[in-house]
Length: 167
Image (cartoon, rainbow, N blue to C red; front, side, top):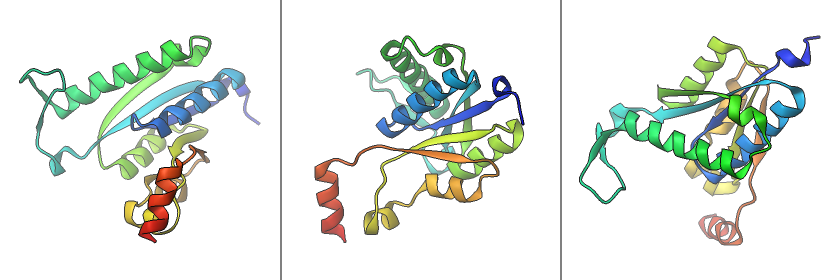
């Protein structure tokens, strides 16, 4: 059995509220287990999108998708650290930003760094809404060589109603 202090957790995030919940769970678990924490974001395949995006700053400043993702990652981390100052693993976590198609890139990172667990967030949709939207989390859980913990976020009443209407 491994020494608990050698555990390594990976939290895969996409800046959504779901991933905020997953990161909070992962960081809390990392603190309790005295584990290393890597926070991973995959910049979705830039080939399928234009190479530059207008920044939401109100100016006509253009940024590459990588620059925009770096800024968003930094903002996301600053917010979650500010909201959770007692969680030490958020301060010491390694952040990792990679480009590509999310599922294969997450699996590739897992192969390369060999963590003990991957933690991801999910809305927990069901029925036709799940089929139409697909589930990156489900694919990672099916294909990942290490355990995957899925942190569900409660679906709002409006989303549940929309899901029933689609079905």
